[in-house]
Image (spheres, rainbow, N blue to C red):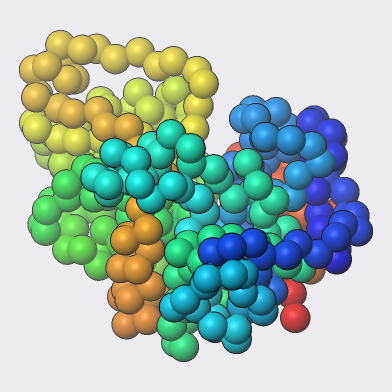
Length: 343
């Protein structure tokens, strides 16, 4: 089968012919129909985060049709439309038992520790299959598995209550999903922070007020727009020390910031003025939960969120096209979402 793989760290992905995988006990094989291109894939390709082996097939946002079952599989049938929860966990450890499976000691990630969805077929545990509602496209289901789910997890970790103000820093795939989800969950004032005017225009169409840091520090603008109060919730998806710092500085009294953007660089905080004196909270966000994917599928089925609106292009399983999208993401020039689509 065809697969686009990371063959050498720091080098472009390559289209290769590899054996079609066979499902083992408790596993299913998916004929991939859609695979999202995520900023994390650029990190893996370029060495910003490590993969388990080389060559490896990236792609952790995957949706398709079940085409083969391993031994002892129940609850899933050949022909089912499914998307894949990308965390392969044991289901038995203390973390899994507490509903914190993202911390499973033996957990593996699709496209990072095992071959992922930039391929015609992929194998996964049957329990990772999320049924795709008839009303939901495969492309929407695929991106739901990471960017939308991580945005939802960030919003839940921040404990947003109806009527609270929310600022979203970084209006790419994660941020655009977060804006829609915050609105669906009853947010009051909603702000989108980004330097890309086109992204801000799309965010405005979803009810967010645009804040462009080109016009001045984002936290200063947010305080002015909230009459000095600040925002109740800030969600940071850019993964830049400056935006992380500004997200914390933008908080109101007892405000909460969820940090989901990936960065290895530290950022400074005026601990007294921006955290202690406001009883503010800085919250880390790691992945998401399978249960959240089920909720998101229902949100999408009902039309509460429109994931089709954040998909800007669909491309084939072509290494050149995929590398071009990853290059843009690595340089923070990425559009909202790109999806690999296969017949």
